[in-house]
Image (tube, rainbow, N blue to C red; front, side, top):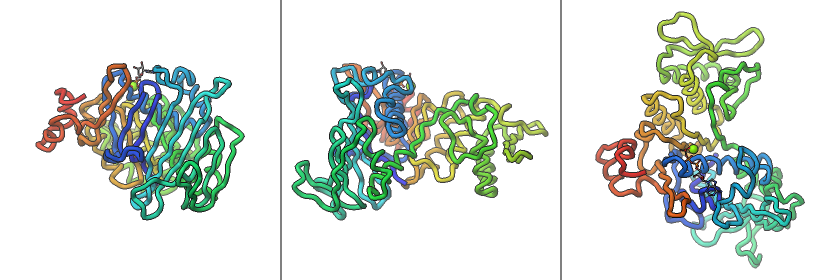
Length: 409
Ligand SMILES: Nc1ncnc2c1ncn2[C@@H]1O[C@H](COP(=O)(O)OP(=O)(O)OP(=O)(O)O)[C@@H](O)[C@H]1O
Ligand SMILES: [Mg+2]
């Protein structure tokens, strides 16, 4: 469980200095909601924001130097904002559940003497129980791999000099400067807060569905989660079927109603144990297998399956869900996504989109607009901050229509 209440990104490509939602260092803004849609003209930084989340994920699964090279990022020098900056910085303000105290994670990546990307600084902070103001306690602080961590669910250090500490402090020196400290320490039970935060970051899912991937022949190995491209769609269905066949049939009933031209989706178990999905299409008595379904049908199916995953990933980022989908399906998809993430701490969904049809289903606070400043760097604000937008939507106007009519964006 958990969600991010805010994020700040500095010097990551066109994101020289952006902030979304509430942060420890700037608590004036409202928290991010569970549904966050990011819009803006081409080149304004939508994919860069998605990639920043992907970069953090890659830093966890590999190391910061490898993450700089992955996904065509081109290495640290290409990645860092072209403005003479020397450090890429992230600040994530995160909360585990309604009644827990928020945690701030700060990460700075720079280059070492050998000109290689490394972790320059990492810090985790949280307020004391019962304190909603005042300086939070640092329970992890590493500079150049050296510093301290606090064991257990409480405690930390008040200031940088170590004049006041609460709880069990352990001095730490990492032998590997490119691996995140939270990755090294988060595997140890005694650092339970780091462990929880790490498992939250590990559960992020960046989705790049391609219908062709979903058409690949799949082996008979159930898998709990859809992979990035959606190529294991049948394996996920098989897993959901195995875990709870009745619930899975209900999910299929729910999904089939939302996919146009599909009457019924039926799971069919093959003699080799593999499960295939049969799609019954209007006008045909015989079913079709997923390989024969249209791109849009497969994509919609994958999105709806994603929304129904058991033990859902806590943060999902989808880039341009509208690609390849008929425009009239988008409003429904947006409504379902919004409904699915709800208001609690189970799931948070970030979406980039070019589609006013998708945005029509959203509220002004859920839409973030990217613009470029006079130096060519991205800036972002909520659609609700534009004049008239909130008033007009409360009078019944739809967000996508306002966007199309250039009230914002
Ligand atoms: N190191 C960098 N410093 C500054 N700007 C950069 C850097 N690297 C890339 N850019 C700029 O960042 C922008 C990236 O845009 P991005 O791909 O995020 O746009 P987008 O909003 O996703 O557009 P589209 O709608 O076309 O997908 C481009 O304008 C690119 O020139
Ligand atoms: Mg893009």
